[in-house]
Length: 344
Length: 270
Image (cartoon, rainbow over all chains, first blue to last red; front, side, top):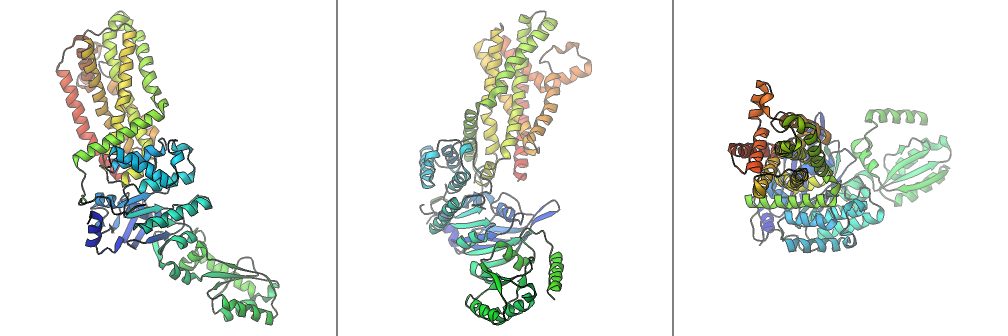
């Protein structure tokens, strides 16, 4: 039995990450304000949140790059502050900004990281070419990274994190700024990683990315976890998709809204461009009833569409403010009141 | 992708890095520094041009006034300019370290299970190549201008190694500034303020006996003066004196103080 599985056994093989009450403040700004996370070994865990929510700071604390001001975190049972050098042997980190050496070539980068991880000269060379092959970078191996595209850099970055085959891999926004094709490739790579037994903790701004990859998701906002659960649980809380109806005759909107709420048995809202009703669509089948009911009441629709929940909606539902955090809840409430007056 | 559980077969995970590992990690980081110099040779401009220009300039400006003629000034100025040039070069170490640390790759170094001192020690070690270039060029320039050190090639070589070693030691001071400063240009600024008094308030360019007493007192205790004297003794007469001992002790003390505080500042700055 090797060291890692021994560690896992000692730990019941359960948790790759156990964090409780992590706090990190930069001056007056509490970037992370009491984050607790538990990540089961062998799973993909998504940390979802807008820019500045504290995702990167959380990852940096878990990856021993930042010392938490309060709270504690353990990686496979090892404390990140007291046993940081052990933790570093168990993790791979791929940062938001490629953490590779710009002035060197891809091969040189990988050889240096391999050497630092204790591999011999020949072994490092072999490992480097093996990883370059696997990530489709062989042709560019000798070129300096300055000439690399964003996607190639990310791939190299991920390759560098896998040299020691760590059991836990942190990916900080692995696909931000990548084109759709490269993003799909990245997702494929991440899935393959987990099949080989690794645990992945990734942060993302995109709900669909978390949806595609993660087994569990924590939604993080202003430094705190505002929701946690499986992808299905999280989606259920916002309604799988939302139904948008545009009414032809403005005066009908009050009546239309009442019908929507009665038939779908949900709370609806009227969007800022008056004449548009938005309602969560938990059961697609009921929409048929709704359309029939609207026809019977003589309400004419000009447009009907179904939208999958966006991160913004998840946020709106969970936190009461949008993902950018610009509109304060109070302002929104008064906005809504005003609209309701218009309706009346 | 193969099994992920083959990291350290049989070995128990340790929370400490051994001394041997630290040395190995530092050497790998030095290798990285050398690769970087090879990739961007233009960063060697300063170490190539400065010895040539300074040696020419100072020799012809001060030569006649101080020693009567240029030829008899050469044994005085070459060791002086050598020490001044090479130590000035070591400022670049701090500046480049600052620039380097701002790049993403340092995040990876920090997340790797390597000795914390390695990224710093490696960078400093790689920079001795710069000091070597500056040393060789200064002596070469002196030779072209007619400097024939009486100590012979062997002693000149020992003097060169001494200067390179002392500059490496002093570069820890600039590395410290590099770690604590916010920008690369402020490193340059602070370092110059430290370095100018040290190199000019010494016996590097002129004999000290015409200076006022209080200044003589400073030049006498200035470690740069001792280093310059040690180099003069070695190169010009092939002798080894107390000044060599004082220089080595001084270098040792600098490393003993600045290496630990630099590493500590580096670790805190995350």
